[in-house]
Length: 173
Image (cartoon, rainbow, N blue to C red; front, side, top):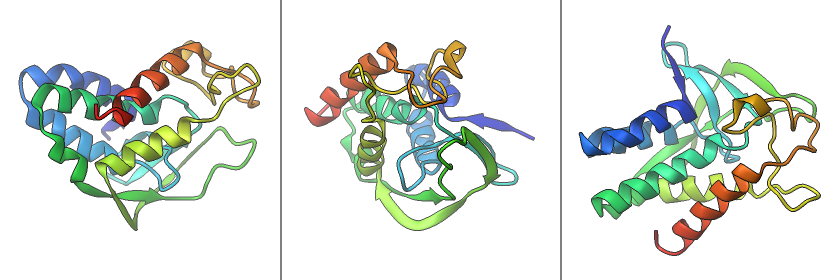
């Protein structure tokens, strides 16, 4: 069964812009369909059975924003922002639950790629006592995968990533 990772596939795709901007665009569209109504995303999923894992990883959702901005900067094609896709629906994680593997289905609610990006940013605006974004159950540095499980861990890396792309998306890229 093929496993697709939200962050991993988007990271792998960014270099493809030099070979095929259509591949990059299609990956953005595909991944937007794996964002929940609440703004978080499936960390990874199996296409064959529509099952995936919902987590509290703090950075996954921002990779969509990053790729959209990079796509527009590289191609000049802002029409990608208007493409609409459906969000996923599924039970929200319980307070002390870090992840859940389940079958998630498309909801009736759809949003433009721009709206998907805004939901990702808004979901990421969750700061700890030091003013840094909470790491959740992990961020890009997989070595920190359990640092924030109790809601306390914060991420300097995530702050840099978040602020960089907030500035770009709200300043017309």
